[in-house]
Amino acid sequence: MVENRPFLTVLTHLFLIAGVIVVIFPVYIAVVAATHGPLALSSGAMPMLPGSELINNIMQVLTETRRGVAPFWLMAWNSLMMAVLITVGKIAISIISAYAIVYFRFPGRLLVFWLIFITLMLPVEVRIIPTFKVVADLGLLNSYAGLTIPLIASATATFLFRQFFMTIPDELMEAARVDGAGPMKFFRDILLPLSRTNIAALCVILFIYGWMQYLWPLLVTTDPKYYTLMMGVKRMATVADSDPQWNIIMAAVVLAMLPPVLIVIFMQRLFVKGLVETEK
Image 1 (cartoon, one colour):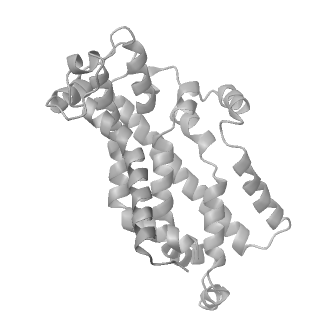
Image 2 (image 1 turned 180 degrees about the vertical axis):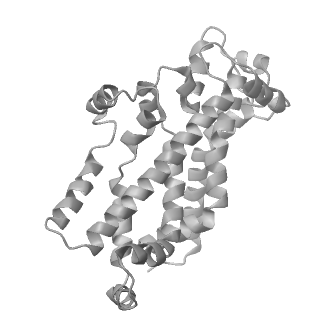
Image 3 (image 1 turned 60 degrees about the vertical axis):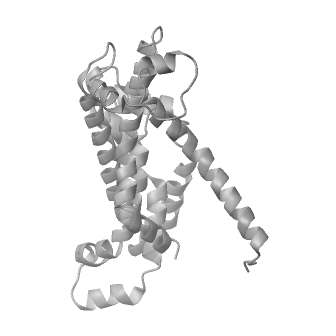
């Protein structure tokens, strides 16, 4: 039961506003820094109001190539490829795995599910050395396959799809079977349309996950042709160590934030609906 008291309403709003400020403030600082020239940031005092150099800084990021850093458009393409391949791969493998676990009766079905579920406790950061060894032995360093394949398997998405499939009534499957639908037709024509919102919600989450990857690309790529935006931003700061051009770096950061923000904005309705339906 939620108590409707004015004091609690004001208190909760104060906490909400404080939380939003804490989250938004670093983003605001990055955006403000991207709007000033190099002299404004080199003085040591951070301006708190926007300047007028945003377009100039962005054009420098997009057109100039810096020592040790790949061109911006190439890094953006690599980040996009990595995010899309990880998203598509994770969803494809997870939904097929969940379909097999829920609708097929084979020995050890629950054991298989729990073995997949246990991998939640083994993220890439924990198994990064053996994973790097396997990728190196397979000759996948400096390739899109090396960037994406080790990150594709997802126990979280498998678990979410399994829980959603278990909410679908058995009568629906029996009716499809009576109508002559085989396993593939039932999966393609019934389960996939019903899972549309869940897939959309996972697309948002997994795209951001793939876009923000930093540690794994840093390990498996030494060729600038495969640098991602996250690596590029870090290298821009490192290369400019003696003369840090933070206005240019922050302009690159702002550009790197745009794709995930646009994905969330355009898929907000499906994202929320998919998460709510997953919890039913």
